[in-house]
Length: 174
Ligand code: NI
Image (cartoon, rainbow, N blue to C red; front, side):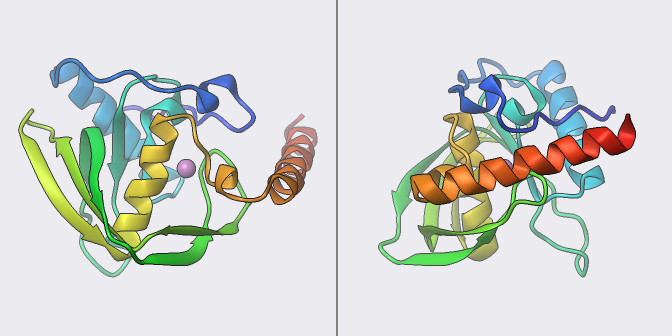
């Protein structure tokens, strides 16, 4: 396993739609392992392949938290096949927008179809943090960031803040 570099916004790949995965093979499983390791090291609860520069429809997540045993999930070609009517607003962050947080409205419940690590097609009924995380990560596969759900003004403000934080970080490590 190896840590991958996480792309930081604004980066063209983060705004690009990813292509479907054609085969779940050992190479893809290596990518899954790298992405999980990178996500845990960050630390984060979800990571999409485009965030490590791989333009394929693959996401990894683990919403178990510190109190439970690790529950890594790898979703290949995930798609939301049904959404509940209710929505819920909660704060989100993203490993590609370090130190930026905002409240985002999401569907409270989503039904997801995906291919698993073994290449089997599966379906999953999600709610709570898992539903939020799935929607956030799936957005990444379509080149959408959580700030894209906000007003243009708010988005501009947060992206400017991110750029400033990144410049400060570069100065510190220079
Ligand atoms: Ni994200």
